[in-house]
Image (tube, rainbow, N blue to C red; front, side):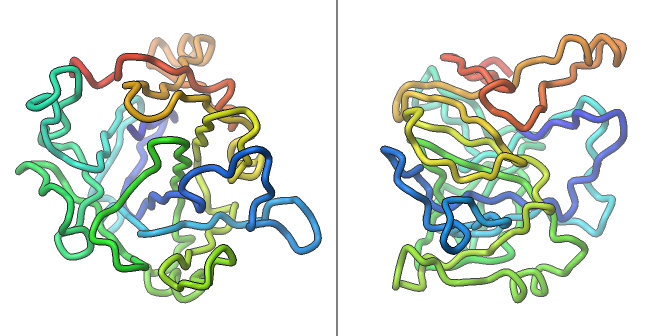
Length: 251
């Protein structure tokens, strides 16, 4: 879910979504490959792996009012039709990370589900994945550039591989608007700099039915006249709680 925490109208047009390399956090405190030379400090940019997704639009086509939210899914179908405890993501107005050319291996979203635009892809996979063990997802802007200009300026090889199917887009930290990082254990290795996420959400992994949910900022909510304002301290350890029932289950 993307939520407009501010008191102003936000526009989703050209807002981008990415998954950080590596898909799964490194374990047992191993050092990231994405560090500044000769140090253990993460670089000033974030490696977007796989596909770069963006909301289509010319600037003001997709408005998000204060306190409004938008749901983004990998598969925009009714998952509850086969698993009763799952969620219905086939509702009109929801969005899906699906492209009929780039990700034809995924289930086609139901009619009415909107499609994000894949503006860049690397590798031969016909599906898009987000880690079920320790995902790290972020949203960012193109900094006023066209998608092609942005790709030209940020595309680089991945030092973890000789296979160029794992190349990335290096997104400057100043273009990152928000991010959340999940760990399997507190000894996992950070993928975000502290300016983006100075903590992590500890989850139990595959098949647990858990969801990371932002905590409500009670003081800010009261100051906003009751409009819900969520915690946003750039520290997922403080901002999120883990729930055993998805917040979308009954929506």
